[in-house]
Image 1 (cartoon, helix red, strand yellow):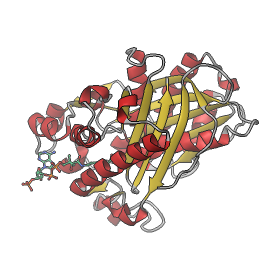
Image 2 (spheres, helix red, strand yellow):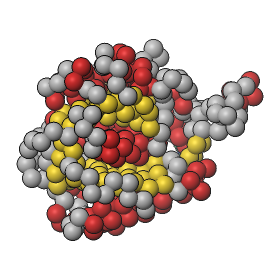
Image 3 (cartoon, protein in one colour):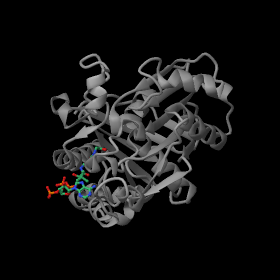
Image 4 (tube, helix red, strand yellow):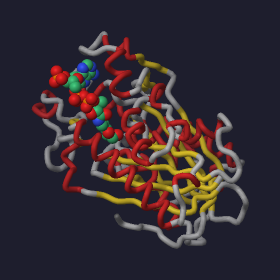
Length: 334
Ligand code: UT7
């Protein structure tokens, strides 16, 4: 595992926010378009419903709404932000980045703005990058967003994938200024590209540019080996958590809350079992969101914060796993 950012000073979480689109699609709704059932989806995944963006709502639109909430939570104006990083696999366009569109829509100054693509681990990768960049005193307040319109890359005729995903966005405002607000104290990230074929979108990139054949063959949508991913998800999230705790001299007993990537409630249950931690200490919102990839952790975190779950002094572990393969873990002190 690569330690991207050891020995970096704590970074303050000044504000958090999230946005879920208004349209809620239940499992019964999906059972009308593919051969599935509420019972199968709930039992195998823990998902009951997901929010889907409107046709004219893009990744950047979801991101802007989450970001405005995070800015308000932080008590800051768009003009205070001097760095923007967006984690997404569903940017509005292949180029330019979602980040520059979000920068313009939010009315940020002409600050560095770029995307990170690390699939479901993307938000924690973006936090890692931000922690490093905030060492540079030129940057003071960073906006980090995970935003996904996964409904735009799902094959709605494939029951093995379309039931899993949802749309949404979550955002953190981070700062390197001294304060007693919640801090990110450590983080790590890793990747194994040799397993890239477990979850990918075959066409639309330089290997297979868009053509009539790629569209007809549904090659612009997610193809996935669910069983292999499941096993890899549990293993990598457990290992990442254990390494993060070990190098900080902590055990799972020191952690009040775990906020895992929301891909499947059974993955979280297996992770909890492996770490020997009761499920009550895992923040889970998958029943109402589905898997929102890079948006999943900041949405779950923002909701848990809004519900008042975190108490001063709580240590919180965020842990993610995604296509790539990628994984990452972040340690927060509330
Ligand atoms: O965010 C990171 C990326 N994604 C993941 O981490 C996903 C990880 N994997 C998973 O969550 C699970 O593997 C799935 C939820 C995708 C699948 O669950 P599973 O328990 O591994 O099911 P399976 O793929 O072994 O399929 C079992 C059966 C199959 O039928 P047969 O071959 O036993 O007759 C599937 O065709 O369930 C069938 N099936 C469905 N049936 C009803 C698959 N999808 C559905 C469906 N409704 N939606």
